[in-house]
Length: 120
Length: 111
Image 1 (cartoon, rainbow over the protein chains, first blue to last red):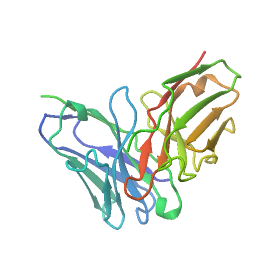
Image 2 (spheres, each protein chain N blue to C red):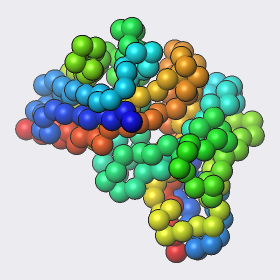
Image 3 (cartoon, rainbow over the protein chains, first blue to last red):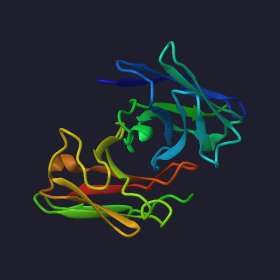
Image 4 (spheres, helix red, strand yellow):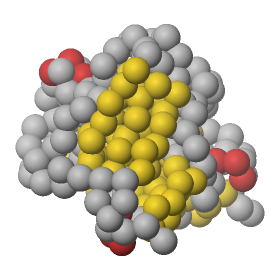
């Protein structure tokens, strides 16, 4: 059973960089896409971007200029950096797996999510 | 890429059936039979309940069913139970450039 766990600071100052890590326990990270999805308080889900186990990345155009996703396959971890944050970036950030190269066009599993607040 | 359109809220009584719609475009919902649905209880992560429009993962109640017509997908919950009260999100694959688009979410209230 694959399990995902997000980690990182819960508070980030405006204009700084938000950095989160997702650790994958059990199972292989090979051949899957590892996504970041966020949810502002009381609002819906927004896809941020993904990294494939090969290193290929793809980002939501609305965030592309500020986001970078990377991976450390030896540690089974992938990370997201979001620069120049504002209060609008306050959200619960989730990591989630999809396997669309394998015909698995869905997100499962998801991490439990981590709330990041942008405030001075 | 615009979000898929869902009703903000729906409600039903225990034992009844409800349907939540998810309207996209010919570039996402209409292009692929790759719509998934997620159930989210307060403070919890989303949980996959339907994939590929109509399929249920192992362990998901057969009270959940999905369908699609044109650019609109639908989630039907039959035999409503109190524990079905949650937020529901649709998600569609939209191609390799911008692969994923979510709906705005629907809050289900069991009366």
